[in-house]
Amino acid sequence: MITECEISFSDVVLESAKEVFETMIYMNVEETFEQFDPGQDCINASILFKGDLSGGILINCSLHCAKQITANMLAMETGEDIANDDIYDAMNELANLVMGSIKTRLYDTFGDIKVSIPSILNSAQASKENLNAESDSVLLEVDDTELAKITIWHRSRSQSPAAKINIHDLKFNPITRKV
Image 1 (cartoon, one colour):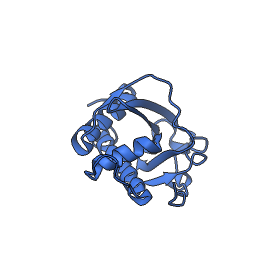
Image 2 (cartoon, one colour; image 1 turned 180 degrees about the vertical axis):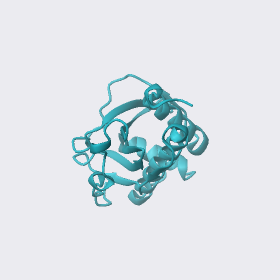
Image 3 (cartoon, rainbow, N blue to C red; image 1 turned 120 degrees about the vertical axis):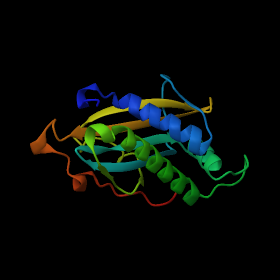
């Protein structure tokens, strides 16, 4: 069994993202260390979790990248119009799939982790300022053309049992469904 101190959360996120993108979305992803600026039209999909490990993940990418992910998920032709609701739903599903893969990889160390419903956040809401937790990020090159960043915030009960993250403190208000 891997102990909590031996876990590389970045590796867990990277392995989970590769699995989801390659098997469910049919897109290749590789870790990259380029500069990342998703621009003002960025999409932030988030999902929270609690248990012996509490925190959340945030997937951040440009609107263009989110449209490519959506098109692949929905088996759409390149250039087809994509409704905003489809983009939000696809990005929420991506967060859900990646979180499910992370949860599976962490089960032996942390046991069952309860997961929230994913939501789309605006940039101001997509910060860790209120989480008071450690974070690890992975920057991905998606199909050799786009960048996406996945960040995981985490705190285990053993790190600070008295100050564990309360899932109610982690709730964010999703943005209105407009791009």
